[in-house]
Amino acid sequence: MPGKTERRLVMVIFLTAIVPLTAALFLGNSLFSQGSAMWFNPEIGKALDRGLDAYVRYARAAKDDMRHQADALAGDPVLREAARRGTSAKETLAVRVPQLFGQHPSLVSLTVLSEDGDKLASFDRGRPVDDATERSLDVVRSLGADPDSGPQLSAVFAIDRHALDDFTTESAVVARYHQMEGARTELYESYFYAFAALLAIVLPVTMILGVLLARGVTRRIRRLALAIDLVAEGDLSIRVPVTGSDELTELARVFNRMLGEMAQSRARIEYLQRIGAWQEMAQRLAHEIKNPLTPIQLAVQECHRQYKGDDVRFRSLLDTTLEIVQEEVGTLRRLVGNFSSFARLPNAELHDESVREFLRDCSDQLGHLEDVSLGEESADAEPVARGNVEVSWDLPAEPLVTAIDRQMLRRVLINLIRNAVQAVKGAHTNEAEPGQVRVGAMRDPEGGVVITVDDDGPGIDEATLPRIFEPYFTTKSDGTGLGLAIVKKIVVEHSGSIEAERSPLLGGARFSVHLGNPRHLVMKEERDVREMATLTRVSTRELPS
View 1 (spheres, one colour):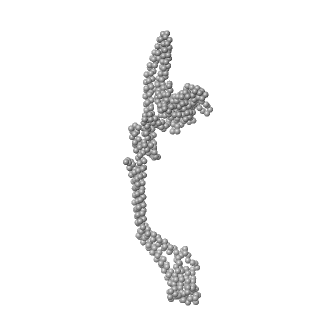
View 2 (spheres, one colour):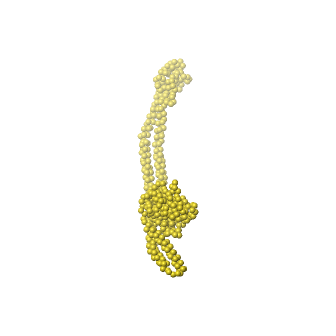
View 3 (spheres, one colour):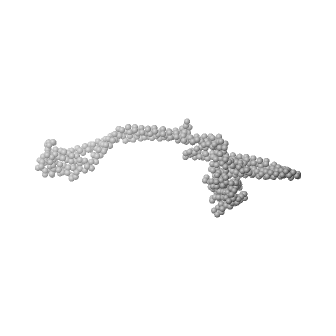
């Protein structure tokens, strides 16, 4: 069933669509009704009819006037007498016809015909009828006593064409007006039905689109709500899918980043707590082991000194025992020293420093490492190798300022370089081809600083890679497993991260120390969380889309 938010969104979208359409339908109906009542007013129709009647009367009056003029011309006694006499009165007709023609300005031509149809006299205005501007009317009247026989008078009249053309146009307009007036109901109904059909189509489409839009929003809100519930239960491995490009997308991205930071903080706290427990245990072990070492050594030495006998075999046994005890006590003393050093590891005090200057100082100061020459690599100076390992330094061009503790970070480099040298020395026996260890630094793409230590040794076994930073885990026969644990604790104290991988530069191992880059730290700790979850058979989960 759709939730309340989804139903509300659908209702809002539905009302947003239905209210304007209904209002448009109502206003359109009112506008059409008012417009129809205004334009199809009966008074307008009557006025148009009266105007058309005036045109009709005008046209009829004009034609009647021409016919009356023709009747007046045919009734002229001089003209009739001359026409009756025929050809003998041509001179009289030649004089009289022009006189009569001048009395009627609308005449175009005036012709007198005999009974046989011969032209007795004729006069015209000197130009024919112009069809573009004039219309003509030909009127024939009898000049004899018998209307059906005898001479005849043919009069051609002209009238302005525009007046009659306007009459024709006005007649068509009035007819069209009355036609539209009669069909306005059908026109109104057709538009009303068209609007109603549009409304009927828009409503279901709006409902469907509203459901889809609302479901897309509420689905992501429900995913966030479910994720928040799981986080409230303590599950920081949950992730919300980041989809879309709106504010909810940014909220999901920020939520995931917040969970990553929380997971990172939890991982750091758990790691520091675990290291603290190991330090406490190391302190106790150092105390418990250190105290009996001196009495044991003194007791064995006293037994060896007090024996005055001549038994060669027993004397040899005492010598061997003393040698073994002294050697093992020395080993235990070194182990106790490592435990004490690990237990007394101080917290980092961070200050803004130049990583380039820090590496330059380290390259000058770390020359005491066994079988290693640590020189600065530059364009005009090549590093010098002593023994079978060559350590070179790639100093960055820019200062790369970040917050570090110089003494503790120096200890990190000592451990990483010493481990790399030992790994390389075990793999390289040819003096002519010394092993390579390379130290460098660069700006991280996310804005932090990365210090890398690469070597061309055998690399790190994939099976042991997840555990190399755990205290007391080592693959060396004489190792204590505290070096990399100390390294990681110092890096964590710097709010940084460290990771090991195959070196893309030399092919052996690469250790990358990331400083001053919270985003990389979050990503690294998320990977640590996933690796820890895998080891405990609990996977990092993402809510389904």
